[in-house]
Image 1: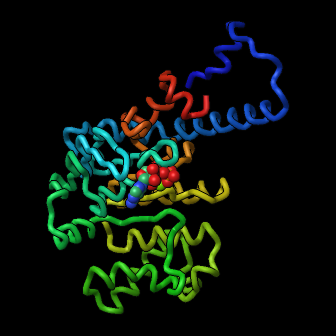
Image 2 (image 1 turned 30 degrees about the horizontal axis):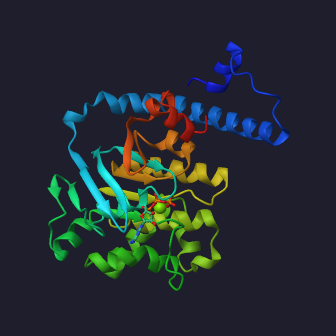
Length: 301
Ligand SMILES: Nc1ncnc2c1ncn2[C@@H]1O[C@H](COP(=O)(O)OP(=O)(O)OP(=O)(O)O)[C@@H](O)[C@H]1O
Ligand SMILES: [Mg+2]
């Protein structure tokens, strides 16, 4: 990845006055973040190369937004298009208020676009009846911002919730499934099942949120800022967990996030929203290597 600051310094053009201490501290931090992103990109390069070897033409499109327009009081999304093929992870990034969570709501059919289509498994869901939309939604697991567990329910009941809502599994089958999912997210089922969310750490809550999202064995996982509010180590653990889910269960995922390190670690492609439009949609490495002024600014120089 080209370093814009280094490039400027080496030419001697644009020589800036000596930086204030706070500025130096910010530069030092952003250089550390850039180094971390570079190392994430390099460590997963072979995985991504293997994924790219399967040409998209061979993979079926699972989630497809085409020319979507949506306005509330003012236009929010205009001509927004992107596709997630089977097994891909698309990171949707952009400044606050650009419509990232809105994209997830369109995919869940909690919102319907004013123009354009949203297809799930090549079926346009914008015209479906309420009941048919519910069926499509059962293909999806959602991990809400801040985990959003039901505070008055135990961990067991939280993870069992989608199974009780959408399946006719027996109590024994439900318990077996809840245990399996808690184990998948590296939680000790015997220890946590009867605990209340208030007794859990932030990282544990996110794990339970992921276990609940995947309880139904969905083919699609949607995450809204799954690592927000976590320390860097726990963020690493959660992103590794999401990667494990992608790899072992071959789900197609959309991850809304502000965490560029998590993007470098998890996403096969990135959709960058700016000013109502998708201004970049392509391979993760290509976004980090882009010389486009807005992308450079968004990535912090
Ligand atoms: N139901 C609604 N009614 C009216 N305006 C809404 C509604 N939902 C979202 N908006 C507006 O749409 C815009 C996009 O919201 P959205 O929540 O999708 O942004 P976001 O990119 O997820 O932001 P953040 O990063 O802060 O979570 C915002 O300006 C928001 O105020
Ligand atoms: Mg949001």
